[in-house]
Image (cartoon, rainbow, N blue to C red):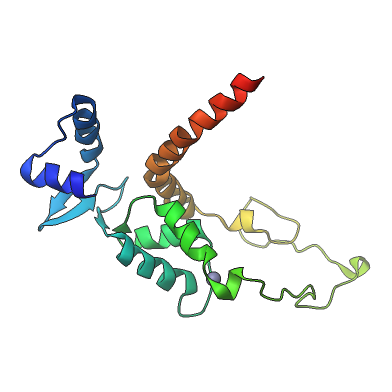
Length: 184
Ligand SMILES: [Zn+2]
């Protein structure tokens, strides 16, 4: 983040022309508000850029949560963005931090026993919906039916915000794939 901050504050760019051009394009996604660096967000308020130390704290707080939810990396990113935070390589750093969590990652005993007693199939009665919702009239409720437009939009916004990181990850993997294809 430091090169972007230097460029936006003082107009300092690297001597290499290619690097300088890359930085100028990269900096278009950022702005300075009250002396702090913010990343412009898709269809939402700008996100405050924080450093890795602060990001680690935010990830841990969100992952463990007050109810000890231990949510996955993508949900951590979504909640952090909703809280107005952004840091570089959001997904990978969340993944790395979550892998260190002892409670949910290190050989915790996993029970195979169902929470409720199993119901024999013969007694199953399909539920008939009474409301105006035409998505499904018969059948047991599923997660798909509960999705709303707001949830879809939130998911889309998150994907757009994480696009840059995905592009970088793909660019890093490209030489590997090239090597593999050359072998054939
Ligand atoms: Zn955990």
